[in-house]
Each structure stands twice: as C-alpha cells, then as structure tokens.
Image (cartoon, rainbow, N blue to C red):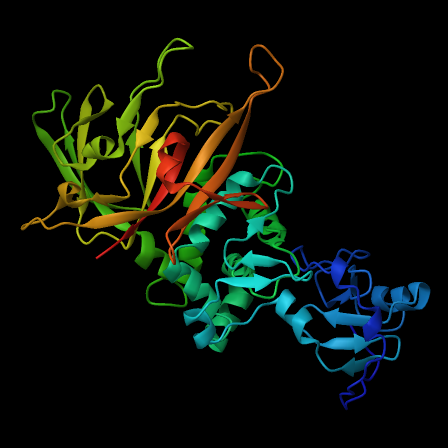
Length: 440
C-alpha cells in the first residue's frame, strides 16, 4: 500500500512531461507488476512503458524512479498521474487516458467517424483495426473481429463507458465482459497510437478460466471458441440485465423432430435454442487433382426446411426447422471437418452464395413472407503446406472478410494486417463461419 501522505492539492505542471515516450506505451497487456507479478496498485512508467507496483518508499515504482531516474507514472486503475519520488499528483494527460481506456458519449456512439489518425499522423479506418497474433491466436482473433462488427453488440460495449452503475458492476464481477468490452472500445477508438491492438489481456484471462482449453499458443477451433465466448458473455451479463445484447442479437430457436430409423414414425418434437446453425458439405473428392466441387449455400440450408431428414444414428433420423422470429443476426457454420485439432486440411468444396438470402423457406410461418439476410462477415480458412511430402507440417491460418456498411466495400483482416478485398469473389475462399444480418 501507499503509506506516504499525498499532497492534496493537484498541481498543474509540465515537470517531466517532456520525458514521456508515447512510442513505448502499450496498455493492451495484462496489468501486472514486472517485479512482484502482483495485479494490485499497478502503475505504468510513462518513460519506459514498464509496469510497477506502489508509490511508497521501497516499492518497485519508487525504486525504479530512484535507480533509473524515470519520474512520471500512471495508475492503471484510477487513471491518475503522479510524479515520483515527490509523490505528487498532476493533471491528467488526456491522450494517454484515451489510449488506456477509450470513453464514448451517446453522440460518439451514434456518429463514429470513418477514419482517424495514429501517433504518426497516418490515417486508419475506425473499427477496421488489426489484432496482433501473439503466437497461435488467429482463431480467436477472427471471432473477436466478427462480434465487434455486430452493431448492437458493438454499441452496447461502447456505451458501457458512460453507463456508470452497470459498468461498475461488470468491472467488479464479470472480468470476461469487462475485458471484452475494453477490447471492443479499443478496436473502435479514434485515439490509437498505432493501427492495431493486442488482445493479450482478454485472451490471457480466457486461457486461465477455460483451463487452457483455449490458449495463445495452441491453435483450436474458431467455432468452439465462438460458442464458449458467447455462453460466457451471456451467462455473466444476464445477472445484471433482464436480457442480454448477446441473446437478443444472435440467439434463435430450432424445432427438432425425431423419427425412427425408417424415417416414418415421429418419436418426439422439441424446440432448442441455438447460437449457430451448421450446414453440411457433400464429401470431398477422394483423389487429389479432381475438380473441386461447388454447391449453393441455399441448397445446404435445405437441411432446415422441415422436410429433409438427417441421419443421427441407425435408429434415428431428424428434421429441422427454424422458429420465428429469427434473430437480427444469423451465424452459419459451414462444416469442413476442421473441428478436430489434428485436422489441418478440411473439405475444400466451394460454397457459392448470393449477397442476400431469403430464409422464409426454412422458418415455420402461417403466411410465408420474405425474411431477407445480407452477408456481414465471413471467416475463412487457409491450409498452408510446408516442406514435408506427407503434409505433416501443414498449418491452418484464419482471417476474416468484413463488409463496410457505409459504402459496401470489403476488407480482409488477417491478424494485424488490414487490406481491401473484392466482395464479389468471396465465394472462392474456404469460408467457414458467416454472419448474416437481417434487412428490411
């Protein structure tokens, strides 16, 4: 704890501010003291960017200022600035506070600018911001990017910065929502020093609470991470709100009818909630060199027309039908057989799709009317072959294509790299997870 009395009067001063090195400031990593590894009472040295605990005599921060002659610090929780060893609080430095924890007003959320300037006055597209691949976390990056472009979800976490009571509850009791929200606010910030951010603080916590089910070092299934993250965000958020933005935006219901092995006698009919609907591809060609087959996404969705029967076992068949009302956003998983960790090369079948799909044929309705959805984003898989003949060193890579709704242009985001792409050629990719947005 800080035991020295603090000078109560806040002093406006330029002392030592010229020593601040913004080039080294990065608040995306876990807020832990570099000496004690403690999360409590952590300060950032604004000269070298390192984290130290405390302000009291003999504390790591105090020793740092005496030994290294660095004097200006930021408390990473209270967001207050101090001069050490004088233990003097000074006026806040707004651009650094904006980098640490971007704040949004109601007007900000409704009128986000299209572009902003980084520390070196280079322009970047707000919201189309890269995420660092620390080791093998590209499978997590694409899921975070996909969710950050669902507007109700994005706006909810941006607005948390001014909803004091709810923000305080989440900050104290739901670390997952708190860290996810901070990352969303940084992805849509106009105050970035560089045009990419690191997901380290969120993903380090994910690794801990999932007991390394999802880690920064071992690549896993993006679909499994998506389901885990949605369940986690929703289950913690529902404690503080009557309904959650996660369920209101993405959760739908499915009518499932079970039949006997002959597909004649109905055994049961149940309704089940879902985050994701899965479509199945026809088997891939057996021989290398055969022409890659093509299918229409609309034909794969026939699985949900209530008539198509799918084998679950030799004694059971099922049919599926979506239940109205459908959620504002539908997530479709194209099953390429990539869910097992040892599978790096999936079914390469090309899935063609229109820009807009009518889901009315797949929904229980008394009077069928069009229910149109437009593609918002699509996560794609690439198999990168190495030098081994047996392809034992093959590697999976993940990226995401996102539509910029202002002008209907498309961007490919692959970790920290962001570049334009051609929307009319997206079907050529090995699309894996798609998010479709309901349109009037």
